[in-house]
Image (cartoon, rainbow, N blue to C red; front, top):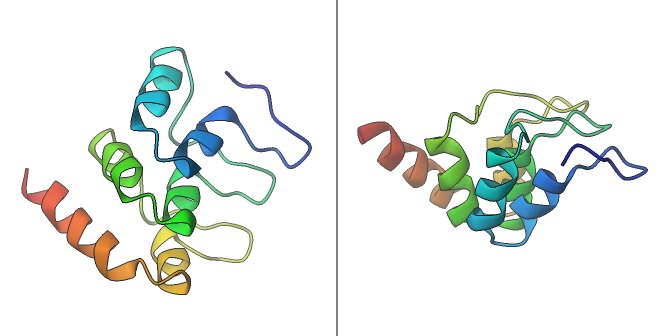
Length: 100
């Protein structure tokens, strides 16, 4: 589960892009970390935010993903979400997860 492509992207990063919390869970159950970073220091949360995969982002948050991590461009998942017009949805989701 920790084999990276030439960009340092791991399977858990790809799972965050394809609306598959089930795949993310499978990978985590088999040793993948939700804090894994690619060559640009992006986490699975960055990928979920970038692609608008709110279901995956919610799953990652419920399992301890951080929203304050920064990639090499100093972007957090919220910054990425703002750039892809998913910021409001991500903020609502974070609030909902925090209340649980």
